Image (cartoon, rainbow, N blue to C red):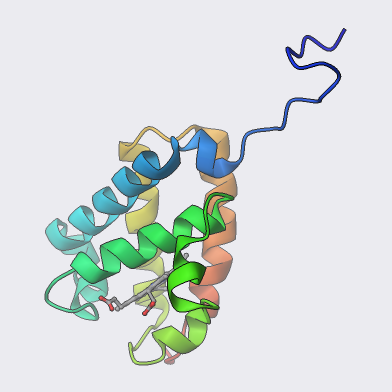
Length: 138
Ligand code: HEM
């Protein structure tokens, strides 16, 4: 007996998307991320490369992360391949912006009560992406 309720089917391990609470959990994380970016002076350089309104960024990061975390591919359905590095080229991103992006995301995950093991795994993967987005020396 595996303890599984479905005849012989192994229980699929939950995706990070499911562990974060699905669409509403990911949305809450993204909203916290941009609220912090807007409010916290320690993220000022990061805030400065963003447009006046963060509404479009909130929707796009939410759609992107849903798919990236193993949930529905809302971003790709709307915009095609993410090509994140190319899409970030209009914005000057140095180490300071990368580090503030990571700091802001870590704080948002902490505030949303993301399990520490999941947070560590996501932080490592996100750091790789954020580092790859750098497009300006410094
Ligand atoms: C490294 C520091 C980063 C900076 C400074 C940065 C900055 C920005 C800015 C200014 C925008 C445009 C927002 C708008 O159009 O309103 C944007 C868009 C976006 N960012 Fe980032 N970002 C960073 C890292 C990341 C990372 C690590 C991810 C993914 C995990 C990400 C995912 C996205 C997505 C999906 C969009 C929407 C792209 C589009 O369709 O135009 N960004 N980012």
